[in-house]
Image (cartoon, rainbow, N blue to C red):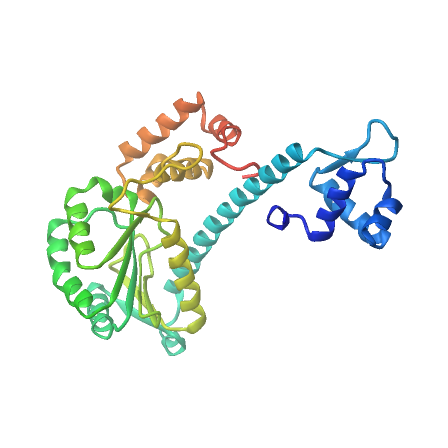
Length: 331
């Protein structure tokens, strides 16, 4: 029953028995539960690690089971910390994926025979995108980290969007949260959703990316200059990883048609991203570029967050952010 909190069935049985018979030692517990003493000792080690048992103050050398009220709070706090750590690991995986993607810029042209096709220049990139879009049958998944769209680019996109959705192609797009402040982009998304398109936003995106029918993915070779070149990836292993990356980001993203929800600490997704990037030592300018906002906006958000915690330096901010629960311990 408590396996979701980190206890196996044997350890849970030992803990329950200790609560019911607090005077029992290892031998008595083993007899009551018809278990080998070795299994009971192994369970006691786990219970001690989880702080569910501690040395008794009354009987030297004996162990005491903490009350369930205290014990369950400890287990849930531990699980929350592990979830926070897992979130950081996911973010690190995104960064690693983005780095791996960027390394394709160094591939030699001969590699095009091994599931990698190199494209040079904006014209070649657009022609290839058009060709892949014409062959679409089921779905297209897109990361669009460039911020707001110009009215001209929106009007140019609409005929292609109508064609794809009219053919029954599922269209999913993740934008940055900053597009919520662009009225033309919000109006475009509203139009797209009425036709059946699906749009969400995320505070950060690892790279620009388009995946066609899970059979091909187009990635720029440089996040600094997406017009200079791109690669089309068709290797099964690479596509499996990129599709999983998209699904992971999509699941955590927020529908643009709704308000971005705040987490349990009261931070919006973009504020949480600023906290995380500040803790990584990024400058206001680097944060602005990552989130597709102005340097002034990034500076204001960083200043507001520091003032909320009463921090006078970024180092002090990192410490206070951990204490406040904005960052997990051991960041």
